[in-house]
Amino acid sequence: MGEAGRQTEGLDAIQEAVTIRRALAEANPDAHLPNLASALNNLSGRLGEAGRRVEGLGAVEEAVRHYRTLAEANPDAHLPNLATALNNLSIQLGEAGRRVEGLEAVEEAVRHYRTLVQANPDAYLPNLATALNNLSIQLGEAGRRVEGLGAVEEAVRHYRTLAEANPGAHLPDLAKALSNLSVDLREAGRRTEGLDAIQEAVTIRRALAEANPGAHLPDLAKALSNLSVDLGEVGRRTEGLDAIQEAVGHYRALAEANPGQFDADLQNSLETSAWLRSFPE
Image 1 (cartoon, rainbow, N blue to C red):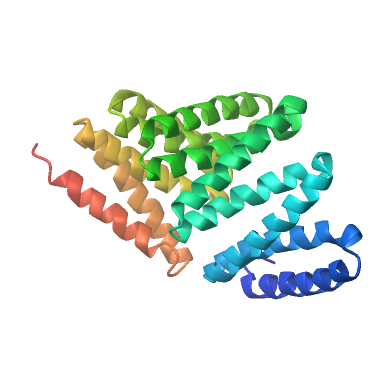
Image 2: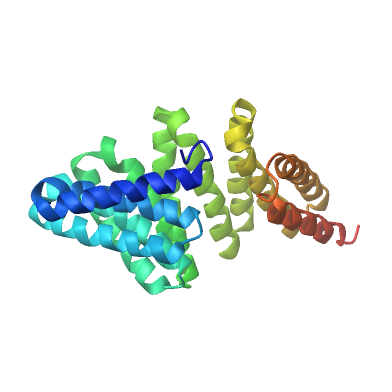
């Protein structure tokens, strides 16, 4: 239902599932606590998408508590789920302004995924890369930019390996990590490398959007907007204008097709265009 755009009905469904799972877990926790934790983790995402972030945070905090109990008793069965819930928890804590706790959560998730990858890299390397990408963002926001850059560089390396083996599954994640890498490189003063990273991200996003515009056009527009800023900052104003004008065109089309959803992105891209036009010839 969520993927079909029926968010309210999807939320109703998972709330009912949680109610059922909770009753079952109270009667027989050994059999049903894992399913309750899974449903709570799902619920937290749906609540967040509905703007009910406080409730969503409460749901994922409860999921983490249950998975922690389960993983202590049976790590082979439940450590992967604990790591996933911790990664989700870190994102929601960050959005709630509780950045120190969010950083601690994702650092723990990364530790668990490293353990899991040692035993089964095929199964868990994608999860480690995702957690590292999240860790890089949290470290950057905490002012620990050198560590954040190291984390996202590792994430990019893993995603390259994964995308070479299965591009359909992992190219979007590689592009996302490259975009984050470009920001960290720029902030580290390594502007040329940062520009290379965002240009590669745009190339990947463009190919994905040509194959499936409904899924990937918003990401292409965002990457083009980021590229335009990087080009402007290295003095390549004309190329930057070309990139942002393309982004504006995509955002106009998206805003017309999805009223209200892309208005802020369109406005930001127009402001970036004005900024680039203010540069001296």
